[in-house]
Length: 426
Image 1 (cartoon, rainbow, N blue to C red):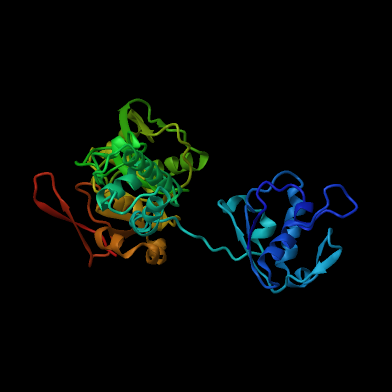
Image 2: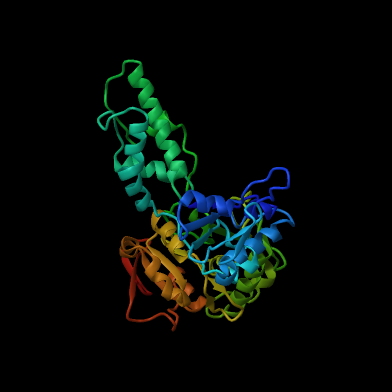
């Protein structure tokens, strides 16, 4: 049975109001138990990350009572004036943002994270369930509308941006409404959508995701970011200009990301001899690092190796491989530290057309979360230090000792010949 505490600011909404008071009635817990018709239900309480005001503390106390088997065996509802045994009920709490769940609750809970759907999973859900349901709801038959996989993938990629499928349902409903209107006005032809015809049904594309570049460039690298809607490509650009050695950052960055920029710059400066960078370049040139989409706040440490790579690229005038995406935090000693969201970041790299993804060696345990078809088409390269990153992603850099020598990554050089760089594939 499902009930919600979203926006709840008064514990009486859960415990009920005494019969002697105005607005008397049982609380949400007892009402859910009554609707379930059993004394051992599975009770799902949604919205525990959206409690309001100081009164939310009383709600937390009630929820903590439900989690304690001894207390829940004597749960008191103020309207009934009796105790109810909830010790046999299975309690599930649901939240969209774990950081907003009160600490007192988090300490008593076993957290199970449910990841968002991958693109291929959304295609299967749409083909098997969503589209047939929308056709039935709009009075259409399967012969009236056909959406091939190419068009469905374009809908998912360019018209939705979410972890679930709610927006996808709305887009399919919009298409079905237009087909139903055409049928009602005498149009008996079968509508078979192509990618080019989507604009006529859904309008112009809403989202334009970043894609892998077509050529190697100096000072441009692809980072990977985790968002609530899944993984995204985060392009990082750098430019050097005559100055006094300053590092300028733009793109609405948080404090954590600014600190990562400083750490990456210091490490590159310490490795100037390996990268064949003139020591005077750090004093004679300013570096401007820009994160596009400046209207979107950005924070987190996982862009550290990407920033270090673009700094090394502009100061050494070496291009960066265009088919490599990466994620990892960097320390002052140049070690690549663990990050989160590996599954979402790998899906983003695969979706954008990258061939190689660099990730921290400490995240090796997270590879099981990456879908098998993604691992088949995307080379996953573990890196331990920034030297490993330079060896794989920068042109004409001596291979780092930390990259395993028994793995090989093949790149295509500018002149068309195949070159080899050390790395690893999962």
